[in-house]
Image (cartoon, rainbow, N blue to C red; front, side, top):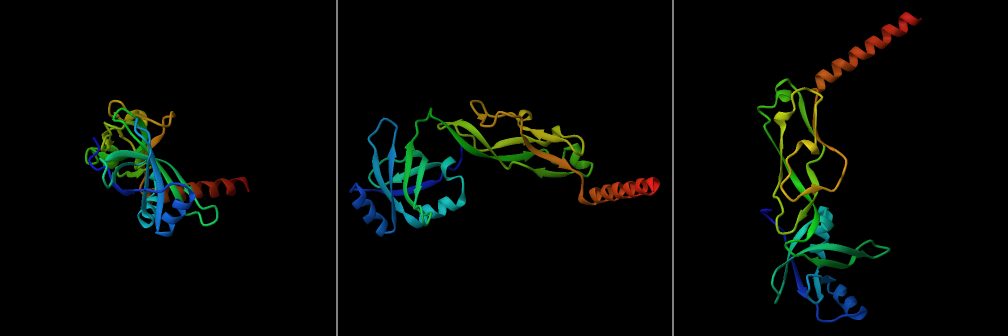
Length: 212
């Protein structure tokens, strides 16, 4: 289970309709709605600055939140839409969907690498290049893994790559991408790459001279 699900604070919104929504925005709040989960929709409002901070962090629509609304039980939600001003591109309304523990959702899960000291490719002087520090997975809301562990000891030579098919994923999860994508690789040190490039250039010059 994920160790930290971020809290998102909001207040219940009493008025509905365009006039009430405009009044909320004038108070530097963003109107919104929470729906789903076999409950009635709940109109909410949240601080404009807080929402902007969350949006700028990225992954807002693929992050599971613990929504805290005054006078209501905490509920897990995921954002389903952020409406924006067509001119200023600023948020004007936000929609959240309640999640059951059995709900399947797409989330980005952090990747942790282990076995660096035992990795033969790294001991040969290779450099670890991380292609995907996070992996988007289909997970169950009630059983979200805290991280995905990648074993680097499977990489033995410089130039080797580690793909998603080489990773033991937690039960009940699967990648959102069907192809066997790369998570990391072992590249040659920059000094060695420079020497190889110089050698290739010298070989090319020799060939040009021979042809001349």
